[in-house]
Length: 412
Image 1 (cartoon, rainbow, N blue to C red):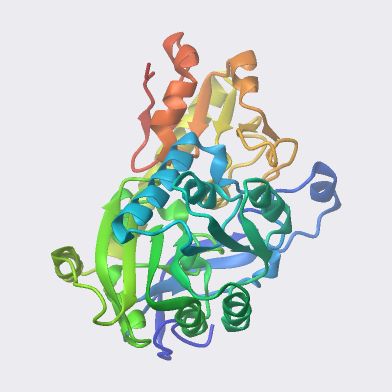
Image 2 (image 1 turned 90 degrees about the horizontal axis):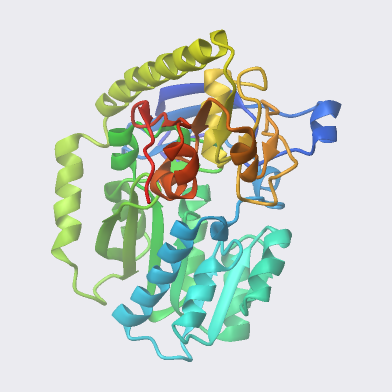
């Protein structure tokens, strides 16, 4: 990477090296894994000296990650409820009429657009490069354009549908390397009073929870509010409200519009002040992160080794992309984990990228009753505890590795 993605500054400093990994969502068919030829890319996090923006040093071509995509928002009932709630809140907060145009960039399987439909929004437009997921989103009643959202596509959509009242990006904003181009496209797509609503993993929560597994090649940026404000200001926009959310490992929901169009909530200045107090754009918190990652790795590998010495069976639950960061950096493979169970039917029957651990249906855990289950989808721990309450209640053991190794307890 030539320089900072945000400010163009020429000097970014490496703050974390997670080795080389395959693209985290590139789950393979067994025959593809057997054929070999997977490409591994360096996974290194850096910090810009000029603006303090956290970003990857090494970028992977988007076509290698997004043209065929196996993550589905609807695979989690927690996330589905969250996205439907977001749609309802946007409609209510902005007093949108049924004929308002909403555009969801990175619409995935259409779960958020489905929520807008439930809120009686008739004009729902999605954009996503993954053709396989676009069909699922269309089946839920939305229009979907297959492609990458850029200035040309924004002009095409505006010419066809007119300007949008709202543009949303949930867990897509961190994927975009061309930040200036993105802001130009948003500017074209939105009407004069239009609102941009984004949700993204929040850097402060990543650091607090040691959620290093959120770092993978799809996420080229790791956002704090302060650098985001600088990006928006450079393009005539401003953040007028901000919320911290518990979903995933902690997210930031940002409401932005053209400068001066809406009153700015006190929460914006308050969070910016907290980031300055915490030194979020400095190297110090990343040095602490590195030490905590080493503790997690040591504790988890010791636990797996102990279970194996006793002849126990160890498996995983949840095959999120981020789990593959942990698996790769910790050096886990089929000798350590017999399989990983996941509810996403698109992943079942495949193997994890790089490590080639088989993915199976969740029922396998109830059939096999393994001695230890490592929960890689730890951000949905409560939902998983409910799902496996019988297994846990009858002596089964599930552990979550982050923010520190701990046992999961049954939830009725």
